[in-house]
Image 1 (cartoon, rainbow, N blue to C red):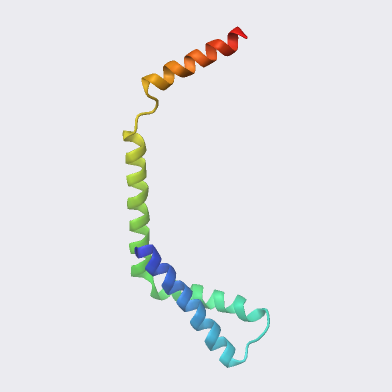
Image 2 (image 1 turned 90 degrees about the vertical axis):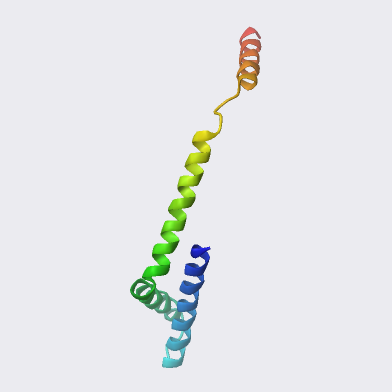
Length: 93
């Protein structure tokens, strides 16, 4: 959930930058480019806590996936036996 909040805050900053720059008089293709750069700088300066929370959340998810992968059986005995039979039949043909 922290990732969603951080993403929404970043999108809101881009929107705010677009609005302010438009009111200032910036138009054309340069408007979205400058708005994204301004929003990037502002988000770096102001969104430290939400960014850290999103980072911790993503790291926790990665650890959960790694633990789930490590705990899952790699190949069960039935599948290994079945694969060996198929391989043997393919070699015979």
